[in-house]
Length: 139
Image (cartoon, rainbow, N blue to C red; front, side, top):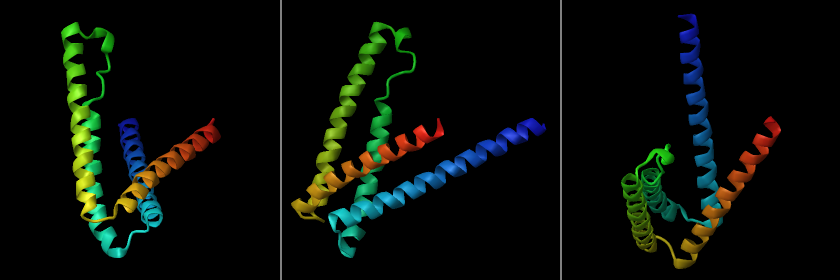
């Protein structure tokens, strides 16, 4: 029983740590993009809810196209269905991005939209670099 409780508490602690890390990353993303794009207060108030809806839907779609874990065990028919699903999902992602840009055009100038895309990519690159540095320190 003690072992079970220890595992449960360790699991809860790991989830809390993960949530705290995700919250810190998200706060840094908001600050980074807001500064790089030079969003006004009014623009930021309109931009972030639109962006958050876009990201939530983008994450859902990306999860849908994940390949099955046991690809070698798929029949040819199952593999073909999954490939079709991936293509459908990719098209849905393109449609989502088009809608997102249309929504952004109501909030931001084209220059700021371009700076947003550039800033988002730069933030992701910095995040990957930071994670790699942390991983190499842990070895």
